[in-house]
Length: 247
Ligand code: FES
Figure: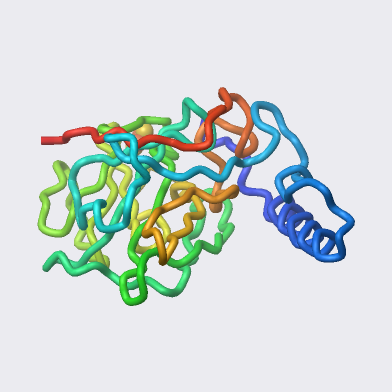
C-alpha cells in the first residue's frame, strides 16, 4: 500500500501552518478564547495532533540525559494515534559522542521525487541529536523490532551497501529497507520508496523533558491517507515509552 500511497500534501501542511500562525495573531489581539489546536481542521480520529510529554517506563517524564546515545534497544511510544508506533533516537558518532544536527535535512521520495524539509535534532546546545520517527516501515508496514536502529559499528544482517552516514542506520528486516536517521530518515536502500515520517519534538532546557509537538513531517504514516485517519485517539496528556530489548 505504501507504493501507491498519496505523497505528502505540502499544500495541506502549509495550510495548517498558516492556520497556526493566524491563531497566534488572533490570540495576540485578545480575540481568541481557545488554543491553537482548536483551530486546526478536525479529521477522523483526533481533533488535532496532541502535544504530549513523553514518559519513561517508571511513569516520570523522560529526561534527555536518561535517553541513551546510540541505543540498539527500541524506545517506542505511540503517536499521534494509540496504534501508531514511533521510536525515539539519540544519535551519536561511532565514539558515542552525541551528534549536533542543527540543519534540517531534505530527504526525497523515490516514488514521486518530492523533497521534504525535516527539522534539526533537539537537545541541549551542542547536542541537538534527538529525533523521533514513525516505527512503521514505509515499504509494507513492518513495525519494531523488525524495523529498528543499528548504531555505528553494529552489523546489519543482509546489508551490503557501502553507505556510511554520520550515525547508524534504521533497517527493516522484512525486506531490507534502510534509512539514515541523521538525514531525516532518508532512503539508503529500498524497496521503500519513501523516507520515514518524523515527529516534531521540543526539548525543554529547564526541565530537560522531551515533548512530541502537534505535528509530523515527511510522508504520511504508512497505510494512511492523512496523518490522523484510521486509528484510535490517544486520549491522554502523555505518551509512555516501551523499551523493546533487541538482543
Ligand atoms: S516492510 Fe520494511 S522493508 Fe518491507
